[in-house]
Structures are given as C-alpha cells and as structure tokens.
Amino acid sequence: MRLIKAAAAFAVMATFAAPQMAAAQQVETQTPAVQGTLLSVSAEGKSEARPDMATINLGVTTEGQTAQAALTENARRMQALTQALRRAGIAERDIQTSNVSVHPQQQYRENQPPLITGYQANNTVTAKIRNVNNVGRVIDAAVAAGGNTIHGVFFSHADPDAQLDIARRDAIAEARRRAELYASTLGMRVHRIVAVQEGGGFSPPVPMPMAVRMEAAQDASTPISPGEIETRVSVSVTFELR
Image 1 (cartoon, helix red, strand yellow):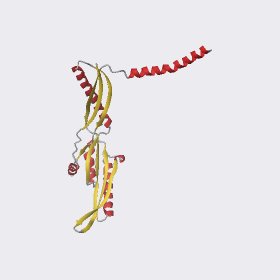
Image 2: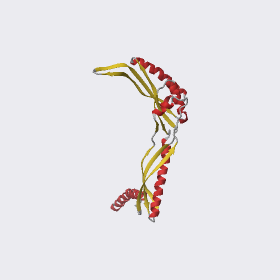
Image 3: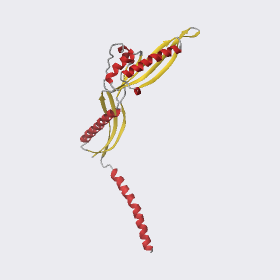
Image 4: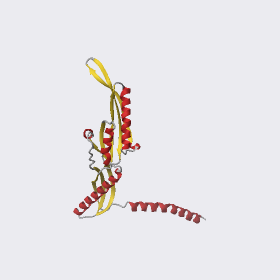
C-alpha cells in the first residue's frame, strides 16, 4: 500500500511539473539568446502629401454706443455669416463657436479715469472645410455675408494615421538600409531584428497668415495654395549581426 501511495504522489508531482517545463521551453524559444553582434540604428521616415482638409477661424466684430447695441448688431451679422457657411457646403457639425466677447472701448485721459466711448462685440467660429478646393469660395461667402475678421487658415489631413503609416514604413526601410550597410562593412550580415521602438510622429497643421487672408478676401476670388504637409516618424531598431 505504501508503495502504491508513493507512486501516485510522484505521478501528481510529475503532472504539475510538466507544464512548467513546457512553459519555460516556450519562453526560451521565443527569446533566444543573442549569439551575434547587436547594432542599434535610429532612423526617420517621412511622408509629403497635399492636405485634404482646412480649418478657418472667422467671425464678426461690431461696435455700438452700448454693449447691447454692439451685441445685437453682432448677432444679426453672425447669423448671416453662419447661414452663408452652410450654403457654401459646410456641415452644421463642422461649425463651432470659439469666442464671444463684449468689452468697452476706453479713452485714456491724464489724471482722470478712463472715458468709455463705446463697446465692441466679437464673435468667432471655427469652420472645417473637408474639400480644400472650396476654401477660397467659403472665405468669399463669409466676407460677403458680413464677416470682417479672419484669423487664419490651417491645413491638415482628415486621416493623419494614413500618412503616419507611410512615414513608419519609410523609417523602417531606412533603418534596414543602414543596418545592411554596417553589416556589409563589417563583413557580416543582418540576422534578425531584436527590438523596435517608435519615437513618435509629427504632422503639424500648415497655417496661412491672417494678414494675407484679409487682404486676399477683398478680391473677387480668394486664391488658396494648400501646398504639402510633411509627416515625420522616428524609430529605433536593434539588429543582430552575424
């Protein structure tokens, strides 16, 4: 009986030990020891593409003898401006109020308190234009409807991840090219990639200065040049050379 119990206990211990040994072998298979020379390469990839979306900050500035008068006139003209944006093809979800303010206009006098000469009201909206070919037409429509402040045009990509992916592929290809160069120079070859780390991507919006836009808005048709946006990604890749 004692021999039978001992044999059973050994069988149970073997059952628990077997999966642990298998797991250990699996980990060792996934991360084999480095047998060659490690080479770390930092590389940068980029994508240059025409933007397909623009954002405009525009609005209305009005003046009045009282705050109420300035704000009432501003509201009337701002309503006409937003209606013009919709007629120009801007969706309701792409129009967002970014600033509303009313402040006194003061005349400063020596040794006397400031004299309030009137009030100024400001209302600004941010509009997204999902077709950059319509930017000039939208600006013209806004100014014709009573808009008199334009704070700039910012170009961007509606899907920035697509441009980042192009830059990522370019970065990896450049890292591989450099690794092959080092390996060839050292009389070795690239055996495998040990690790990859992304340093981050950058795809800034491209602004168009306000002064240029305000001057151009006086013309019958506002010229727009979206140019291209450069998207960059940096990576650090560790290779094993043999």
